[in-house]
Length: 193
Image (cartoon, rainbow, N blue to C red; front, side, top):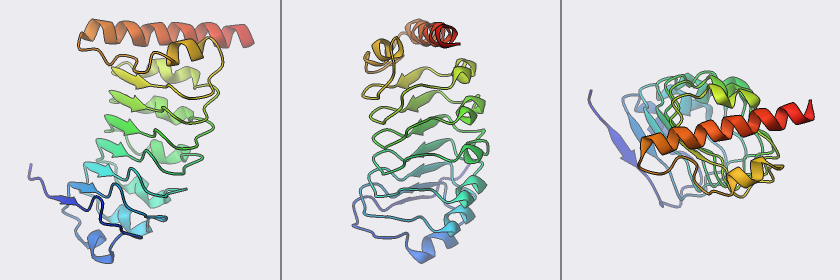
C-alpha cells in the first residue's frame, strides 16, 4: 500500500485548506496544533485516509461526513472542545485501532464505541465522564485504556486513577487490567440496578 502523508501541524490554520479535500489519495493527514474551529463536510471526501490527527484545535463538533472515512485506523481528536461525539459516527469506524478523545469536555461516551472490535488504544482522559457504557467489556482487543481525570463515580474512579490501564509492556498485565476494569464495571452497574 502506498502512503501519502500531509503534515500541516502548527501552521496556525483557521480552517482546512480548500484543496486538501481534493487529494482523495491521502492516507495520513495531520492538522494538530492549529486553530481550526469547524471541519468542512468535504473532509469526508478524503476516503483513502487511514490516519487523521486533529488534536489541539478548537473543534466543538465533527461533521457527519467524517463517517465516510470508514478506512480510518487512527483518529486523534484530543485537546478540542467536544462535549459529545456522535453515536452513529462511531459505527462507521470498524477498522479503528486508536481513538484519542482526551482533553475534551465529553459528558458521556456513546455505547457505539463498544462496537469497535479492533480498537486497541482508547484515551478518554481529562473529560467530564461520570460513567462508561457497560458494553465496553466487549472491547476484547483493547490493550490500553486511559480514564484519569474524569468525574467517574467510585469504584471506577479508583481504577481510572491508575493513569494508564494496560500501558505496561507485559501483554498479560494489559489483559489483566482490562479484565479488572470490566469486573469493576459489572459490579458498579449491578449495585445501581
